[in-house]
Amino acid sequence: MKCLKINGGKKLSGSISVHGAKNSVLPILSACVLINGASVIHNCPKLSDVDVTVDILRYLGAKVERNNDTLTVDTSDINRFDILECQMKELRSSIIFLGALASRSDRACLYLPGGCEIGLRPIDLHLKGLKALGYDVYTDGHNVCAAKDKVKGTEIVLPFPSVGATENIILASVLAPGRTTIVNAAREPEVADLVNFLNKAGARISGTSAPTIVIDGVKSLHGVEHTVIPDRILVATLMSACAITGGEIEVKNLFPEHIMPTLPVFEEMGCNIDISNNSLYIKSPKRLNRVKKIETMAYPGFPTDCQAPVMAALSVANGTSIIKETIFENRFKHIEQLNLFGTDISINERIAVVNGVKNIHPADVKCTDLRGGAAVVIAALKANGISTVSDIYHIDRGYECIENQFALLGADIKRINDEKKQ
Ligand code: EPZ
Image 1: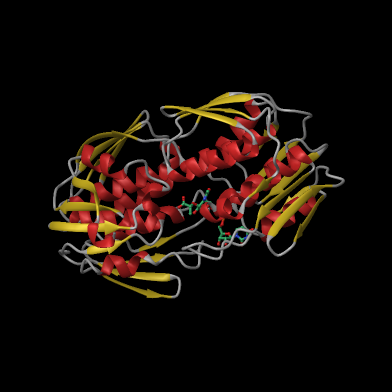
Image 2: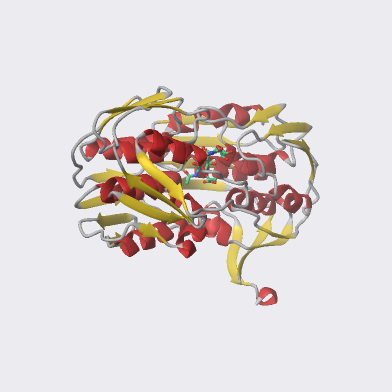
């Protein structure tokens, strides 16, 4: 088993470029199913979630070539409209293929995705949306299927601005006759990036900054060239690592407007932040201040995906910080691992109380999930001495070669084979 060996206690410094956003690449690759032709997608990071999605596209009959961070996806010969249990278990967010496959093929069946480490991850809003559009949605308890019946545009009101449900409904309606209006749609930048990709391909979608998205169905879509937006969650992860180590770094090739929801938190921590063009410069204080209260919200609120990395930074702040997780019901699993470093974090239902400690010590910990894994790496970068982080396959889902990224900023971090675990 691979693990990370981190010799912490060094201030991060230097400059780093941000790779493309995982949560933008995945829906855009699903959207390629709607296109009868080839698309070229730049800034696709080398992540295991992207690899699984590429494997699914190839299983469906698409041709996919990678050249560095560019993927060429030719979906002219797609001839399957199902996704296997093993594939869905590897990447439950592949439910996003349902709308696109049913739209292209008249009928699609995907293995019912279960929950994951951070919650039950229901798909009721996805299915309600497809039913409202006229798809015949049914499950045999093993698979969930959608068959194109009398599909036409309609108004869909989401009780919660679900990112996945918004994206699935967009993909299911972009070739449907008539107008579809999604009220209370998700406004995450990754949804806007998907819409930009689709509009370049000939779709007619508007409204991604308002909570209402309007899709006017078109007959067909053509191949496009597109560059994926930078990963705003990676930016916050790098900032959290800089903050906890008292460092100063430059983060390049980001979109400032996408990270605005997190900046007040880093400023309250005592970090000095300058933004010019598409770069951010952050200088951290010797010791961070506590942040009175953080509440995760749908965009443009504080992102739930930044909760764990920021919590790691606050674990050594001066004072007590309160973090409320309102999006996922089980997204505090990293706290037990953080406390192995000597942090003092307790949980009361959806609220984490982070009593900042002056110092933390090295520990042998494991990743509980993708962002929880980033959190324990951030803590290990602070702890003076050697820590090991195992189950790093979680991290590889969403961060490209995280050890190289932090090593570029001066960290002493290596990926090793953990004999003990073999
Ligand atoms: C996307 O997940 C992201 N994943 C998540 O990133 C991110 O945390 C989340 O949006 C919120 O921003 C991808 O884009 C691949 P939701 P998604 O639908 O679409 C409930 C990461 O770390 N809900 O907005 O699954 C759900 O249970 C990952 O990169 C329903 O009840 O998020 C949750 O409580 C983690 N019914 C809330 O909505 C539904 O049908 C948010 O879910 C759908 C969702």
